[in-house]
Image (cartoon, rainbow over the protein chains, first blue to last red):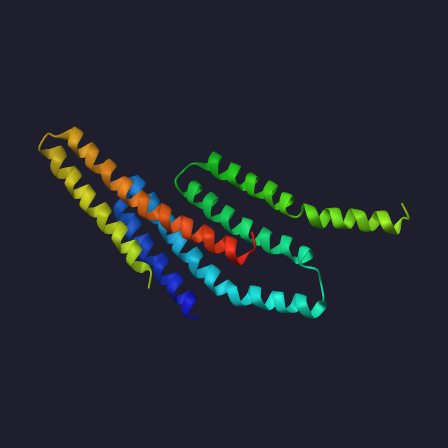
Length: 130
Length: 64
């Protein structure tokens, strides 16, 4: 609850200050937005820490291998960073760069989950007796 | 609370824009440009450090 309040306050204060800065120097407004995004992101990651620890506990109970759950966590991280980068670029009016960052994030998410896909492939291979 | 960073950047922005206007009015346009550039670089250094912190945090939490 405290984290949500902090994020809201940071967001509103930044919006007000950015509206003031945009009139005179647009680039500093963009940097202010980026700083606020980073601050809220740090807050978010700190909030997500207990959730990730709980997921690790759950994995231990289920007896799953670490290689099976790691791609999921990595994909969440990739998504977070992609979203922050793409939104800041789109906000600054550079839609082409924003879209390309999103595509990059998508490709990277696929790359990160390659071990999972390979595991599925080898499972199918052993099941079909090959 | 980390909101100090936001206020710091906004303060730099306001000071730079005031200096910019004063310098432009007194006819020193190249100095005004240099002031804007210096403010931008200062803020960029602060923000880049914070972005690196965020990336390290994400890397640590999500097992990169």
